Length: 418
Image (cartoon, rainbow, N blue to C red; front, top):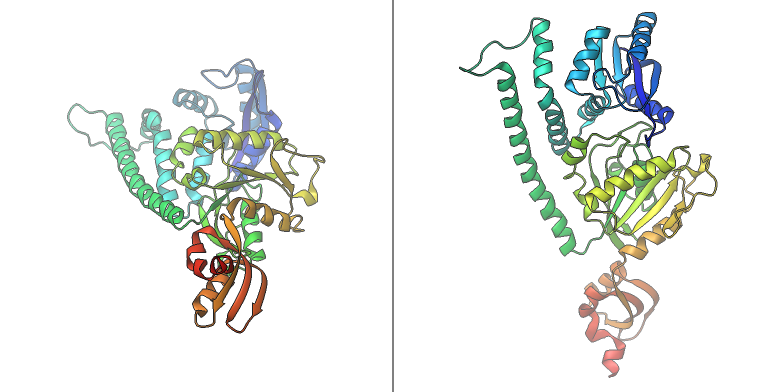
């Protein structure tokens, strides 16, 4: 399918039009659509009838014939009437940015939960467009003819969509309760949650795989990592053990500018892990000339989730090919990082431990040889400064998590002496 991209550059637009259209290009490629050209118009406001003005629309029609275009993709969400008006002028298929993103999500979903979330977002998108879609279907000879007394086909279609939306929300609520129970169980077990967030293709999944490899996790624990937009649409949880400390590492979906509102709302449940995180690692593509815009997009989503006050490490990833020297986040913890060269990987792990290490106390413990299971607990869960085999038992100078101290209290030499 050969596509022409169409955008509008507004005076007060926060998005750089060249960047926004290049991102739209990448989104189209993600669906296997061949992009032939891009066009945009500088406007004071979007044309309510045809998105762009009549002069630009004439240029678009000429380009369609010149380049044998069979799909127009617009860089913003179009109203049903705009789609209808444009298609009547160009006589080819018209798609907007929102529907393009929904189609990518629909194609890439990997779990039951993400399938339901995407279906919900798509139904919410289609609901106000039912009449136009029905008219379009009727024009080419399709459409169901059976309807109840007094009901139009549009009303039937809308009733069907509303019923489907209700069913999906009920099923998502059920799944949400299960997820909340899992999160609560982790909290009771005092397993901290570290969430990877960032713009799509910033390198979150690669960072998760780098940490898994560094901590000698099994190969099958690694997650899908591709150099493409929205490679990950599910939340992946992996238990990490580093320096005898356990934490749950969570890889989340990436964000993108102009992400459809309904899609963000639908994915709130997938993003529940982020809201409950003890630490966020915000992965940034330091090689992107648009890093500031990408940073702002992610921060806005985190704010909408109520996750903007969670402690955060800003990870300037892809530092091996950066063009943005001197990047920093004033007043926040940040690291230059590379999954390729493993730059500052040790430092990243140590910074994570600062946030997830449970409260500890240092003690001198003498465990009788008859209590081998307690020695195993120390060996497994405590940081050991010194270890000696003595006549009575094994001596440990160690750092003990407070929650475990009661197991060893009677063998604490300070307690025994007193």
